Amino acid sequence: MIALNRSALAALLCEKELAIVPGATHLFEEPGALDEVAGLASRWFLRHLISDRSASTS
Image 1: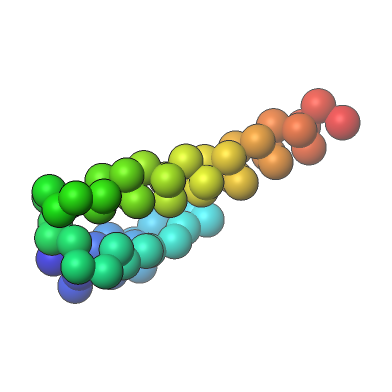
Image 2: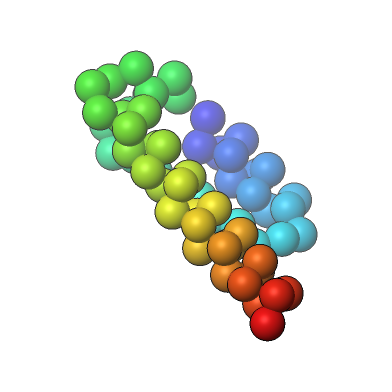
C-alpha cells in the first residue's frame, strides 16, 4: 500500500506530503490511528489553505 501511495504522490504536481502513521494499517482501524490521520490532514489544510487565502486578501 505504501508503494501505491508513493506512486500517486509522485504523480501530483502540487504541494504534497506523505505521512506514515506507525503501526497503522491501511484502514486505520487501530486505536488512535484515525485521530492521528485526521490531525495530520487538518494541519496540512490549515497550513496550505489558510496561508493561501490570507495572501490573496492582502
